[in-house]
Length: 555
Figure 1 (tube, rainbow, N blue to C red):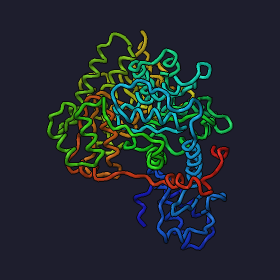
Figure 2 (cartoon, helix red, strand yellow):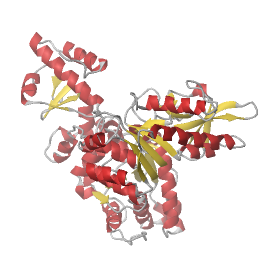
Figure 3 (spheres, rainbow, N blue to C red):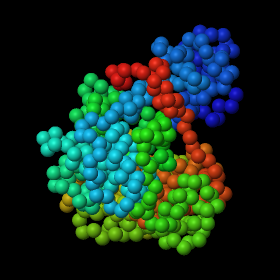
Figure 4 (cartoon, rainbow, N blue to C red):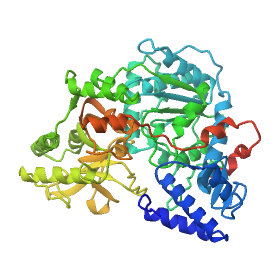
């Protein structure tokens, strides 16, 4: 039996599940084999494991496998095998979404005047009408398609139709601190472009928070302060980068929406799905066309980046390679084998500018590192994040900068890899270590999602790593002026068009790729799709199945 595809956790989980069943040796071995496949699938972000008819027949009736109505570690449902927890998350989320999607929006009647929108995008106007009519509105589109401007117009329409004494309370949120910060800034810019009354403009917040903060963290618990029994106080909740929201978090969020409130989801269905289980946004868009508006006109991207992103999204390998090789667009470039030397040089330029600062200017330093970032598909390997970070540090040290790999030093960029609710730092937050004060004390500075900066002694930080390079997954919710994307020399199971599309669209002005033609074609030849039963649950909304679970069961 080849166990090389499985982690130690997969094998331990399989042994545990098999140990829960008092069955014959042959059945126990079958259960063990299926359980390790389920564990592997969950590790890859699937919420369930599709079964063959034979596997389903063998599993049916085993005491470790239930139907979702009894307490069993595994659940068998319509040819899919679930860990019980994820089965109930899917079921409960479907119920919450069905309630929201089918609800007519509370408040002022539909049909008021549409706030003035820049341009003449009919789909933006459709989104405004959707917000007026439905309690659930989904606005999807690629970067630069005007999602933020659209949501501001949606909010303005709701606010200007409300009486002054009953203005809806609005909350802005995103999965990560970086994404929340970007959302708040983008809303502020959009407000300046729309001709809104002072009353309406004041009611639209320009500060966003993370979903964890919105729901209220309970230390040492996976539950939140806000739930069905203690719903969120907001009348309208806007969530940006919704593709990053996993199954469990979306379930808990929808559970906490108070009766009569609106939920507006913004996201790009073509980006990578969440790191954890599920592809919730993609499932919702596919299942709820009446609640969805897709924006297709690009306003912001450089033409070269937009063209390359579209070729990647469509799986057009030859077109993408031609765009890279042509070199006609300054915003797109193909790096040769000496490409890694170019990346070292770019960080040398940043360090030289950092050294020229007369004092500890944390905001300037964070801005410098926001100009350029290396993105890799992998954490490990010759072209993985760990190797690239070490390479850059050694290159900087060789140029005379006071960089000591494995230590804290002035100018070290860092990425938080574990949530610390006490410090208000979350997985994915980025900061920079700088000398501070006359004594040269090292402090690590971060931007707050709510605005402003904060700093901590390095010894107080949760788990973190150097971040000259970061994985594409970790880059979600962030943008940089320039991005260099490094793909492995050989094929890898993590490669897919969603990953490369996400990486390329992190760049505002310029993107360069270090990739061979063969690997590019392999990457664009496959789309990574996650196994889920959410769409089927949503389709069962009226049949009296277990999907009709009440709101109070969703914690």
